[in-house]
Image 1 (cartoon, one colour):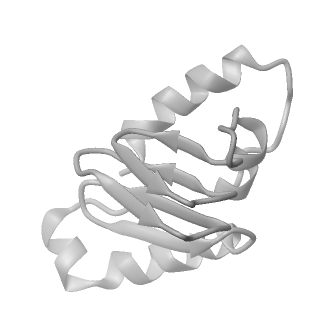
Image 2 (cartoon, helix red, strand yellow):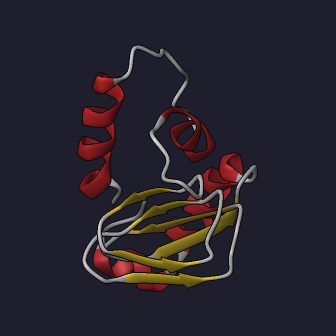
Length: 110
């Protein structure tokens, strides 16, 4: 499900001469270029007073106001919102989503 942004993210990684474990979304945030508010943004993102966040949009516009230290990842099936530093728990969330009848019906999970 993350295929929409993974390609773009890996293209960004190639621009950097940094080797990092990208085993978590927290690591993705650490390596990529950030804007003046320390946000990493891909896709359709509109933000006001948003800081220190990773925001990966796909089809829909992701709009944020006054948030910080978040990871927001939109996929075709689900929008994941997690506090930065909790990225490793996304694997647990994926396991739960795989058992969810709604995601099973679409045959796609993170």
